[in-house]
Each structure stands twice: as structure tokens, then as C-alpha cells.
Amino acid sequence: AYSYIDQLEKQYREFGLISVKLFLVSFVAITKPSLIKKFFENYNTFSKQNFILKKGELFIPDTLLVASPRLWRLKRKFYSPIFTSVNLRKYESIINRETKYLLSQIDSLVENCFDIRHVIDQHVCLTTIDALTGIYSREFLWNEIDKVLDFIHSAQAAATKRITRPFIWLDYIYYRTKEGKRIQAKVDYFYKTFEALQNKEVIGNNNEIYSLVDQINKLREFDKSISGKTQILELLAFLIAGYETSAFTITAALFYMGNYKNFLFHIL
Image (cartoon, rainbow, N blue to C red; front, side):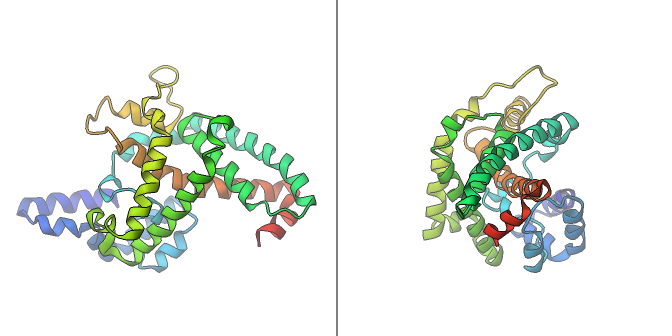
């Protein structure tokens, strides 16, 4: 899908049709639904996939729309190392560790008929941040995690609305609305909270990149345009999508570890 956009951009640039480029994404969504559907089938990582496809088979996942449209294609190919076997093993160890921690808490919480959804949300978000940033500190993150979750849920709701109203994809229009200003305030807060991640040093040697933030920092050596809030916006886009994915992973782990009856009782 991304290569198809590049092809169209080059084609329209030759004719100088700048105005057409403003609606290029919508044009692709209308003319290439089969290509987009195939893209989703190959990379089935978003829990709201079916909902999005029913909204017109749009090819941009709603979880990415919280980021500025100009960042949708920001050098994605350079992020591929995060999915190599080394990173997957590390991610698996994170999931295993956090799942065991969750199980130890759930055993006592379920006995008291406690609604465990929020507890799972918190630990899923911690797990996702750990996988993407390489930082795991309950002391540092625990006081902020509910605000991060509030931001994620608000961003998802706003992104869904931006699907049904494509015209507010344009940032300078959307962020002048009441809802847009509210979302932007949450983005600014998140940015300030995790601003230190921008300066995080790459772990290990040049051949060992262990987190998404490490990879973005490494990418800055080759692309000087990546600076300021660009990194955080990219992290947000991956964080929201990763939160959906790791939530499913932990849910499946709990199901297969024999707690599915109690778990489903409190979720449904």
C-alpha cells in the first residue's frame, strides 16, 4: 500500500497537481480496497481490523490516525529489526514475566469478585512500553500509567471519529476543534512525561537494537529530519497499536493457562 502511494505521488508530482496530493490517501482507499484488505490479512495485528474494513475498507488503521498524517509512512522499513528473532525472544520473555505477575494478582482479586479489567489494562500498557522503549520501572511508570491509558483510549475514540469524518484528517482543522484541543493537550502531557526517552542511548553495540526508541534514535544518524516531537509521535503510533496486540497476547495467555472461566466472567 505504501509503495502504491509513492508511485502515485511521483506520478502527480510530474504534472504539478499539488492539490491532488492532499486527497491522495482517500483516493488510494477508494481505488485499492483489495490491496488494502490483502495488507491487513498479511499483517493482522490490529483488533479493530473488521470494524475499520466495514467503514469503507480504509487502509490506515485507526490506531495510527492519532499521529499526524505526514508520519504514517515515516521510514517504516528501518523499524524491521524490532521483529527479528532476537527482539521476538525478548518480547516473549517480557510477556511471560508480566503474565506470571498478573496471574499472581488475579488469583486473589477474582476471589473477591474484583473487576480485573483495569488491572490487566495497566499491566498490558506497562508491558507494551517495556517492549517499545526498553524501560521497565514500576516506580517511574506506575503513577503515570492511568494517564497514559486515558490518552490511548481517548486517541482511539478520536481516531475512529476521524475515519468517519475524513475531512478532519487535516491537522490544522482537527486541532482547532474542542475535541482536537483536548487530544492535543493529552499528547503534550505524554510528550513531557516521556521526554527523557528521546535521549536514551542505544543499548549494546551497533548490531544490537533492543527497542523501538533505540531504533528511532539510530535512524536519526541517517535522517536528520527526525527530531523534536517526531520521535514521540512515532512512539505513540506504535504504542497504541502495540497495546492492542499485547492485550490480545496476554488475554490468550490467561485463557490457555486455565484461568479463562474466571477471566471471561469478569470481562464479559
